[in-house]
Length: 434
Image (cartoon, rainbow, N blue to C red; front, side, top):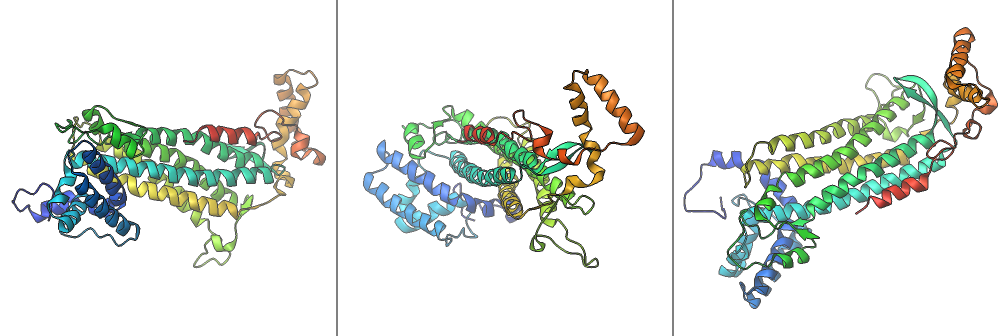
């Protein structure tokens, strides 16, 4: 296998297979960023006099050609080549001879892969942000559309107090707005240039790290080369924590929808094309999409723990363990994007039962309204509570039919059913963006 560290000794094939793992397949996701990083690096080498300008132009042309093959999906990582970095350098060397070998001057695969990962994770954070914003918009629109439709709220799986579909949808919109700062923080951590830290101890060549920082679009750089290498694991863990927040929110939406689709409740339904059937029970409409979202979100949430454990008890400097971060984080990112897309699809097709609250089984949820009505007459809350509790115990609780509306319930404080504050929730999200 062709390696950048080849010393003329053939390595054991089993050792190669074990230590490589899934790295070669996952490396293909980094091809674009490796080329972008290399273009910035050789531009800097030419600027500081370490690479003749004419040779830089040749290499830039070669890198652009390879980049087009990546974009056209014709780029191939050959079986005999160790990784993406080796493949790109090999292609340049085949095409341009010794000039191609100069691309690695002043850097190590350690800062090269770190740069690739940070560029990749920055873009993944942006993609995820846009998908979350689409879901956020759908939830706000649903909240506005169904703000007048009452539904029972539950605690301990017991009917509790009046809620509304507007309140329910708006809750998840605001949850996403409060998850977004975690993604912003992860993006900030990824937005620090490690290029030039080399193997973790800097380099005796006169590198211009500020130039590569600007050229690559990083807002700043990690100045200390040891600190840059210690960023391995920290950046991945920050991204895993951020997507874990979104996964927790989607997991709860999924669980709610599984529950609310149940015929015993029947709060919501979906077109038959978005549900599955049973091999034996012809009446079934199973919530398989929501169940898969729920399960995948639990897997996504495990990524943070896995990366944390991989990074535990390691001294500073590079260790091959770091390679395994990709095997955990890359699939988690893909799952997260898919789960958000499917949540959007399902919610765009949700059907609301507008008559739930008319069922007499839900009359007791208005007990707090009766208590509050007494409080408004000047009766102390605890006395009012006991009065209504005694009434329920004696003869159950009914509630006037004409009071079964959001308007009649007079919930008007910020964020309540009668005052969803959707503009303020939207502003909260806007302030969390990057």
